[in-house]
Length: 146
Image 1 (cartoon, rainbow, N blue to C red):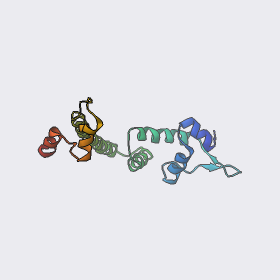
Image 2 (tube, rainbow, N blue to C red):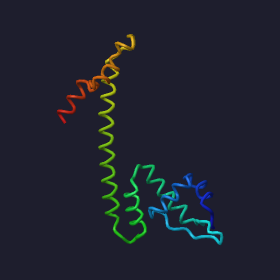
Image 3 (tube, rainbow, N blue to C red):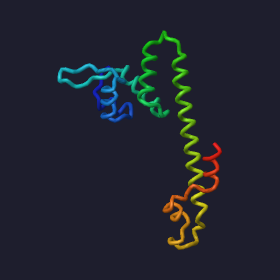
């Protein structure tokens, strides 16, 4: 089976420009060419693109995906490197979750500065944003204690 890039995009849900980018980055192998110089893709391209898209849905970087693909292309290697890579990715996710939770605390503290029954001029949220005083007491304590 050989399909053109537009059909590959439709089948995979991936934009044509993204497919070309993945090719340029070496994540997808170069496709065969037709007599008219059109790119022709096969099942291996579809499957590899699905793998890449799944990795991206897990917020993996292109560097991480490239490493996983390299390991996947050498199936006789020990999978310890795969585990190490995934563990490092999990740690990155945990750091981002922590940062997002801190952001949420700041936003909740900011929201508590205004009851909503004042004029905009007296809005505690806008005042907190204006004087950079939006990190309430709990955020200050969490920054200094941990």
